[in-house]
Amino acid sequence: MHTNATRSTPEATWPHFELRHLEPALGAEVLGLDLSQPVSDAVFTDIERAWHAHGLLLFREQSIDDLQQVAFAARFGELAHTLKPYEGAKVHPALMFVTNEKKDGHYVGALPDGEMYFHSDMCYREYPLSASMLYAMALPPAGGNTVFAGMYAAYEALPSELAQQIEGRLAMNSYEPGYGASNVRMRIETPATEHTLSFAHPVVRTHPAGGRKALYVNRLMTEYIVGIARSESDALLKTLFEHQEQPRFQYEHRWQLGDLLVWDNRCTLHARRDFPPTHLRKMRRVAVRGERPV
Image (cartoon, rainbow, N blue to C red):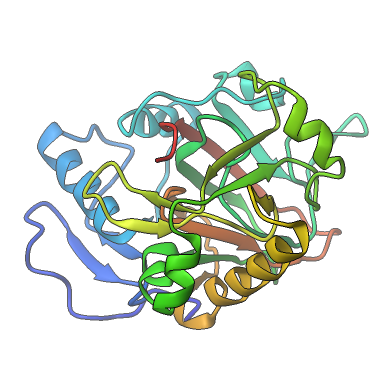
């Protein structure tokens, strides 16, 4: 697992830009594009194709404003509005800051500090996010790296017996800051709505572009596997979490100012390293609404 892009030989199949692998399991760095300029349909087609192939794209040394990022994210699909009226929503309802910045004693954004376990964004909703896009605006002198894990590779490396055990299973994903949901019965008996903060999705999901299978559980938000005893579910999830978090499936990103990352929540997980709360860390996020997992 590396913390910077591997200086590998660029792939030769991308006529509009250079593309370099970050890690075998996921990720590529796109070179030669200035996202402050309009992106043609032909160029974006290649960007999207590369994104589907690698799950995570890195664009370094970008200088883009709020609405330029919103416009680029919108090329990936329907924008997802934030769940709360964060300060960024004054500019656009899909924009928010992931930051520990405060104004008048209140945080201006979300997820201000601390470590975060591996997760897939909004997997507790019926329609989770497909794309998430972060742009680095201010960084602490150390810490705050984002670690990504490739769930295609994790699924394909499962022992055959374990793969058979989870085939066709659903898992309940729930939103509780830092924990799984605390009231299992309530989540089983309460009808799901558009605003429900828990939802059961396939343990193994199939990507709509290409049909590859990915492991779709995570330590932060997956609470239990539906239809089996809780003790059996806990043991099975522990095995899956330990498997999917192996370093061989990871890429750890050490942020630089002007970095823009866009990742596919349908086939990747991400986590955040801790950082000193006395230093400002500010990321601008825009996200894209996805389809219901199958």
